[in-house]
Image 1 (cartoon, one colour):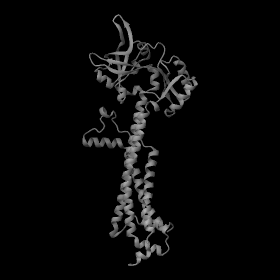
Image 2 (tube, one colour):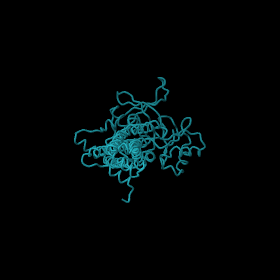
Image 3 (spheres, helix red, strand yellow):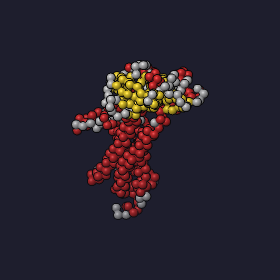
Image 4 (tube, helix red, strand yellow):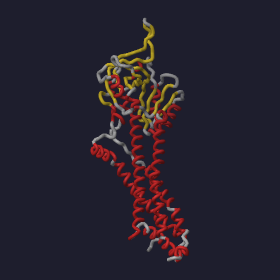
Length: 416
């Protein structure tokens, strides 16, 4: 009896005996409903976080954190840009590149538009992680003057060409011949095939040695720009802007937050919408808490009247039922937290067990480009979900508690 009697009664009313066991059953159902809603929210947001992280890593493995390019055409002073960028403590690596567009075909097949990227293989591996996506061959097989090329897996299937095959590449520049203007073209041998899991890259991006790209597109000793890999990718806008200012301006800068802004913004919007929609699951469970407390108040009218006659204040009566509803919400939230975290941490094992049980694949790599279901728990999401559930649970107790506090002892005890 060292604890406040409001807390004691609130805990006592969580369960009933004999013929009133239905109220305890409803309380249990309310807890389970809250736990289920919280667990679903945690699992769904964790999966979306995992997808966002996986796709961000895939994009940045093929692209770069930031890039500095010529403002009006090729970048002539690219060696100076390299030196200044590499001197910055926030820059992990920097590499020049040549970029352009072209048409590629093999044999008698149809031409396909491609994005040409000329790189120095040893430096490119420091700013991007193309090597992890190589299916056959290697980026190191690209050598100046050999006119070798690395293409994506989707483009390889579209052209029906494999490693060692020949392709013909056209660029939008003309050669003057006796027959008139003819587009520049060059035969290349396929040295490797990569699969990044992003259709945008796998179907259109091709790599060649930077010297070959300069020769093909008549860049001379200039390049398109310099790509940067940063220590902290989330500082990309500030770092690349500071480097451009140090160089004196006159450059075009871009970073991954701007070049893929719509993509990541759509993921954030989807996460917000999913949070709001799935919060309705918790809200439905909260309605059970309200109905449970209303039933308890009706059932305990006699006890409430007796408490009022011996000196209990309306505020104390409200506290009794606020405690009861809050405990239901707290236990349900903690149970949902444990369940959701457990499922998120073992999601891949659960998915594999279900696939073995029904003899099917839920994530076909040829469709989703992901063979595993990624999940990433974030403390902010856990705090937001649990905080929302606890707040709604607390709010749901106010009306039943207010009704209990308005109980008139004389009217209730009149016929006792």
